[in-house]
Length: 609
Ligand SMILES: Cc1cc2nc3c(=O)[nH]c(=O)nc-3n(C[C@H](O)[C@H](O)[C@H](O)COP(=O)(O)O)c2cc1C
Ligand code: SF4
Image (spheres, helix red, strand yellow):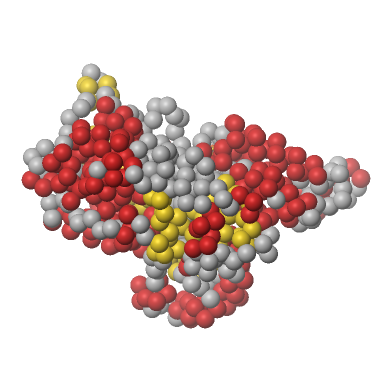
């Protein structure tokens, strides 16, 4: 691969490396800074970083190639990435992207000849309630329309620095439409920590247990069990035993704010307006498990939140709610660092997230061992979702019984739903668990609803026949996405969008997922182009089974969900696109050989084999 050299990279790199303490675990952050400064990771930078951090060059190159916001090929001085979720598409994203491309004389996916601009698509940016959305040099743009794109085109042409663009282009709103105990009842910073100190860590764990809080990131694992495993973790290494003591510098609390599941944006709102509650929950967790250090893994798309989150952390340190001797307690030391991701959905998977935190590619680890015993740097680590920590703070302050009285027996408390799609009031809705889909649809002004995607592409698609089902772990578990499709929509378009998403986001580590997601996409595209046959539907089912049973992690095992659900519940969406033929191969051998035939000048019968 030919990469442009940048001879003057050393003066630029020196302060970046110094800022990150020449720490190899900060490799991703270092590469992010290089990308910001150069609009590329130059080959020379890879060499120098490898030397200065003392890591093999291939590792640096591997990380640079893994994350979609890093690039070893030049991107424009202005890089515009349009959010490609189905809800953005429903709002006209494709036309808008083409409109901006035409305006700036650039082809989608390419860099303009003068290097000024590149325009492409990216996975969901978490702004489905205010789309169509995009990122410009990593900063979130919302509510795009032709007028805004006219202005953006002018700003780019006049080379106006993004920092000087009109603030209204970057405005985001919370869109909280329904608040319950989490969003509606304020908790003063420090109240939950004071309650823990008064009650003690053990009794707080008992309250967590009584609350029956289950993780809000999707899998629904009981939070108290996770915390108790981490607390009890004893790691033997080189004759040392790391055991049960408070504020241990080698036990970690990680808040998963990767929020990459298309259609999900509730963590964005929690971090924007309830950051104190989230950090409070992390601090409660730290006291209970005896952790000394915490990380917030913030998805790269939410970079605009970084400055204000750092501000909240600073305020909490000044108020004695973080740092050494928290609230005057001599053995209570805990602080939080924010780590910015760089565009990789797989980094939401907890073990991939930990790899990324360590400055590596986000490749899921083999499990067991689980992070609670062997997590960050091989040490006991709790990874919980943003909303889980917010709930934990509330439970610490108000008790387990209070929380357990809300929702259903198996799904206690409330759930935040990120509602988008064909609704008149998109946004965040907080309900006690057990609410019916029908109720949510009525509240959000759904327009002739036909299908709802619950929990994003990796979740469940339900049809209008199932609207009396309930949002609860025992019926429809969800990480929060609630995308509504009206009758006039073609469900197949959503399925196609999701298969592209999975093929793009597969980390490529294991063959069933790498090949399976690519083949799934190919077959769906073939059906879309009118060449599908009944045998393709059988092939999709076979592939789906393979993905579910043979994949290494949850991405692969859920990648067929939208296809299988749609085949079972909306067979018409597929059948009306099928060609009459009984069989047509997904791989066009003749077409694939065409270039070679042109090069060799052959057009004889044998060249067509
Ligand atoms: C592909 C994939 C992506 C995930 N993305 C997220 C995410 O963005 N946020 C999240 O909290 N959990 C995500 N998870 C689940 C995490 O692995 C983990 O279960 C969760 O962070 C645990 O927190 P909880 O117990 O509070 O739910 C993802 C899992 C998979 C397989
Ligand atoms: S299932 Fe997919 S995402 Fe998970 S490890 Fe395998 S290739 Fe990577």
